[in-house]
Structures are given as C-alpha cells and as structure tokens.
Image 1 (cartoon, rainbow, N blue to C red):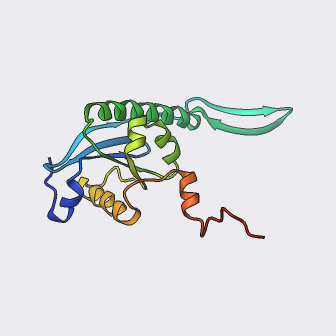
Image 2: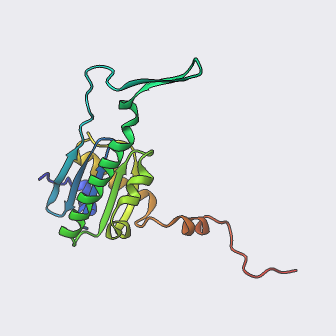
Image 3: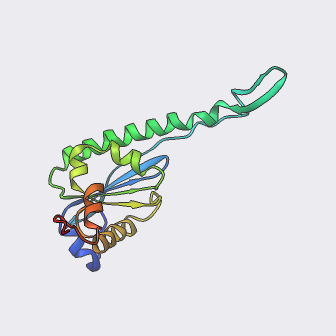
Length: 178
C-alpha cells in the first residue's frame, strides 16, 4: 500500500478504481482514504519465434503477390486474448469492490474503443474519465495524479457522445420565429 500525499487527499476521499491498460498487459489499483493499492495485474507474453517460422509466399501465374509470416497475423489473436482477460478481471474487481464510486480508465488511444466496450456495465456507469496513453510502467502515484488532474479539468462525469454534442451547441432554438 502506498500512502497518498496531502495534495491528493481530496481525490482519495472517494474510493476509486484505476484501470491501467497497455498493449500487452494491465494493472488495477484501488484508491481509498487509507492509500493506493495494486489489487491485480496481468501480462500476456508475445510468442517468440526462433526464425521465420510459418513464412509463406503468395504467388500465382508466375507473379509474386506478396510474402509474409504468420507471426504478423497473430496480433489480432493476442489482442482478443488481452481484451478477454481485461474484461474478466475488471468484472471480478467491480463485483468484489462494490463500494467504489469512480472508475478511471488509462488506455492507449488505438485500444480505447475496444477496451471501453469490454468493460462491465457497472464499470461503464461509474466511468469518470478515459485518459489516453500507455501508463503501464508509470509509478502508481503518477497515475493517481493524472486521474486527479482529469477530474479537475473535465468535471466529474463522462457524458455520452450525444449529450456532449448537445452541450457543445452554441444555442438551442426550439421555437422558430418567421
């Protein structure tokens, strides 16, 4: 457990879950008034090939169309394994820590839609901010500071896409005068 500094005491007053996802792993932190605790983590190892195993050439009619290796096409399978593991573990954490009021998601921008859609419904309802970037190797206090800064800058709730479109309009004219 890591003690929360005085500057973040207001942030730690409400129990929160920090979901930090990278491209090959994830870490899960619980922020409470007592401190910051890493409750779970996992990493998916990428397969290591000794040489060009599975190398193939696509050709036909005496022409060469392309070549490649099977190891390049396994990235989709690795991504699906990662998303499934992330969804399972986040669901278990949400169910075991029901007292958490806020959820912060740290994820690289290219994975954000996939990871966000894999969250359980309870986590989506408590989601306060999605912070883009790979924070997997950052210190837990730096991650907590980023989450605290995101609540200061954006408010406390993440609005839906349609609601944000309505809120960003300059004015709403319900009655048209002719």
